[in-house]
Length: 101
Image 1: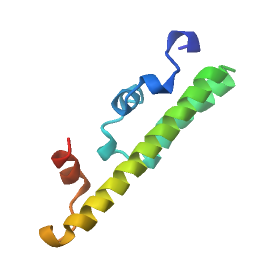
Image 2: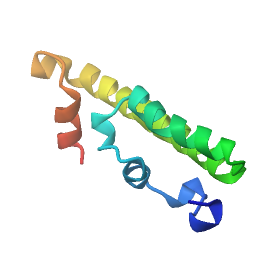
Image 3: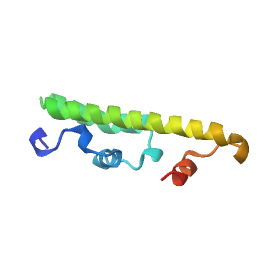
Image 4: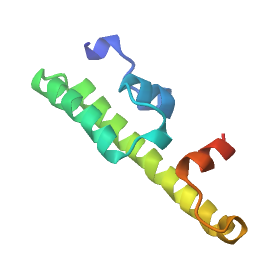
């Protein structure tokens, strides 16, 4: 894979596209370690091959997906705070995403 074979504009991808590219499941099923474990070898490989465009692209992929997880965790925490008394306890992450997709 060379940078001329892939669109390296991170804005042209959804989070699901990026997860698929890394062979990861949906955001609610992965954590920061999964993302780092999937991207680190790619960043190292392309850096070693001196393909700065792809090394930078996969660094952006890593940052964007970690940010998405953090945003989703914040939304889940906010939702839980609002509905804690109604439900009598904290919702599981999967339950939250099932309700909001």
